[in-house]
Length: 323
Image (tube, rainbow, N blue to C red; front, side):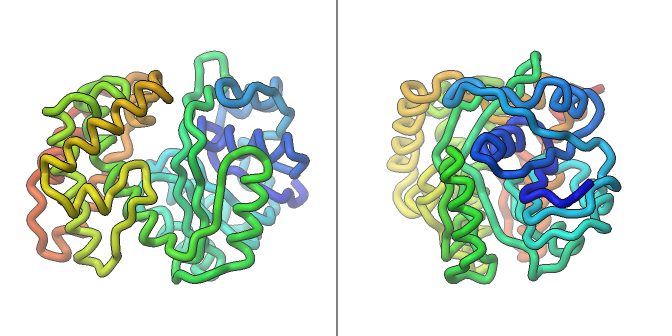
């Protein structure tokens, strides 16, 4: 297949939201999907509901070998199996690659597959849910940040963020993408762990003082891991990570409870993608996220008991659910 402007690896919620908006804006887009999902997209296009309401035709490839390349590769599939999926695309040429997956491991995998010079950092504070009929419910549209992993300004990051933002998915370039990625990761680890263990919509466990306290302690452990690597924290994340790690524990709990109230008003049906995966019987992103963080902590000889406990618990839930 001839080159497109954008190749989107993964046609789940996030990949579909970004791909559909870019295609509607007139960009050439190809989705890389598997099996039934590829058939759905080829037959009916991508349908977005919720914050946007439209359907747009987009071609889908189920055979990566057919893709010669694209200007930009955006990785949006679940983290399990990412290395194998990227290996199947090593023959293709991409000017730039980025991943909006969870956790920092994604950048290492892209660099191994295509070379570090073609990798941009990225994170998404954007949410959606793939519905049983193949449509995607678009629930949160806050920001996608894109930037050079080495820091500083970048024309290619600004151009890419500008294209996505103009298409209707909020995006911006950042000079400190590594800081933002780790700030998001700190918050995401807490949110993911509590969503899987409580099985509640997001606002409910954020609003409960007991689960809010657990989340705060997890975020603070992740903050310690981030600082141990020489990476500063930021409040530009799903939750204000720097503030959660700086003040008293009671102040941090109040911040979480207030965030829960905001979710209740603005996104009452929001569920973490991990909870969606759990309820659908899909594998959870444990090894590549919580497991990755725990491995980094052990390398740095950090004792993070909450992270260790929740990693074991979420792993057990994952295994028992699919067994």
